[in-house]
Length: 253
Length: 253
Picture 1 (cartoon, rainbow over the protein chains, first blue to last red):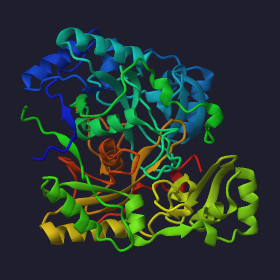
Picture 2 (picture 1 turned 135 degrees about the horizontal axis):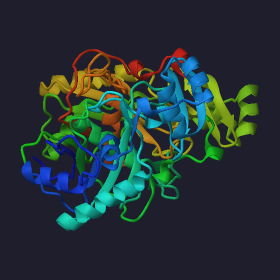
Picture 3 (picture 1 turned 45 degrees about the vertical axis):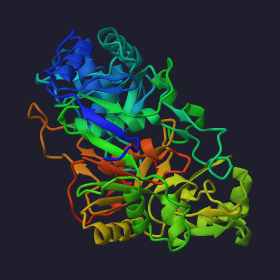
């Protein structure tokens, strides 16, 4: 093979089903060692929201929900279980769109996505759903700190989730929490090869890294962690809030 | 390193400035050979729209444009050059949003994006812009056929462009043309690890591959081609139209 610099996505295989208070950092290090992967300085570690939520106990039991009149009415429009709608509303600032089968909200964190990220898939117990972590940046920092403690490596960490999009079919994996690196690659003010201002000036590095990771994570949830190696990133303490387009610059809310 | 299956993004370095009628397939093969990269069956070859447009002569000279009254009026709202607005309108079915500085349209191809993909950056001549290829699937097929002819390899090809998104900051690279593979990974009907129907059922494989490629292509345009290796894809003749969400299932038009 050539000496051309590459970017690689490497799945972390064989993680167990995650339960409350699991030490994700230690589990990741353990599985890397068991599968012959050495964590390196500069790696970006992508962790699926689902396992972060399960480790943090960010789950809800559908049977325990008492839906409000608002949830019952909305559930009628949507054709959904009012108790699940209640869980979604509890995680939301406002409803962005609601039509039969589709509920798009702005979450308490500021994400605009379907069902506030509430997810019934890949949970071993029927009747239990995950909600998004309270603060996915904090979740990412805790994993980053633990990885540093155990390996001495300076890595970046992303918590990711798959979101659908307007206009285009198919979900893509995006970052909902980050630690250790700037999730945006800001090219504003830089010039292109011909010394003119560039048209596309800011790249969502973190979302592109999350998408890269998903190519080896798969959607089945069996591989909830992957390393992305070889990416050029700027270290520092940033928040995934940088990836939220401010309402005043958003024409589609 | 371990035997864990990986996905790699490999830049194709050293391509010359592309001009009309350049044989992109031959240039890609030449640069792969020169940099020690062997093209393999199963590789996905991502080619930036900019070089496809230049090779196909999909360019417009701003000075040659005579703006219509509609373009002049819209340019007043936008604060843009009416001649460039005319080029955008010529490439559009309709205007989706127009506010000062921002013009979002549905292109003649069906993409919803800023400025119909008309781009002034990375063109060596001032006053010249690229427009999107007439048929990026055809462009991808031509490159795929040429790569097959020259190397015997069965690869997939994507033509990519960087689009901005509602709600989230930062552009991401997406596929606007494909050849040789299914751009969607359809999981509808499949079940998750716990035998329940999955929430996120269709993944935009092509857009995730385009994003992966951009991690080594950079935004400066200096690296307009990359290989993405190790992705599990379904061969066949498909169109990037599969990535267009039908209007009746789109709540944000």
